[in-house]
Image: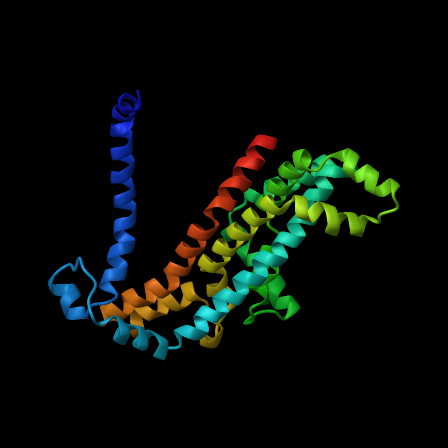
Length: 274
């Protein structure tokens, strides 16, 4: 019986493996090319790692990539953690509180998702200049915390995960709203919040257009912005350019591999509860 089922599923398994290999191959080749010299890359496509990776890495680090990596890391960390906190408050309020214009406000939040960031960039730039935040990292941290998609995730999850009877019981025992939020609501929203943290972190790490407009000094560059300038710095050094791409890409891939279980659980739980 098992062999029969395996034979039936074998074509699907083979197809999935082939598609996965095609998806992994570009990343594998990027890593392999980062360990070779430019001459080797230009003469023949390498399939196995070389011995020039250390020199390419030193060349990338000597160009200040460690600073750019740190900039992206702390910006993405602050954005994802702060955004998760703000999103949890908004999503919990929309799910469990009654107030005037609640549905209208929630529709406005969802409507903001349909506006491309490029359309609001001019207004955001004027606002950041008025606040004196231009050429700082604040425009890359504070505005993205208002993550409308995260509000939808948390609201949908909270509607089914947090019983109203539990909240009423806590209130009847004299618990304050802040105590209920921090001691009861936040732990129960953990799967949804981990999903929000992962999505915000990856979005912030890969964000290119905001740093391009808001940041002018090279010491404030993030990884995506630095990668765009490395094309000129390493115009003839393709091994160095590949190594810069590896350093900028691999952390995101590792984060997705580590957090894929939480991401799938959060998205599936939100879909089921909605």
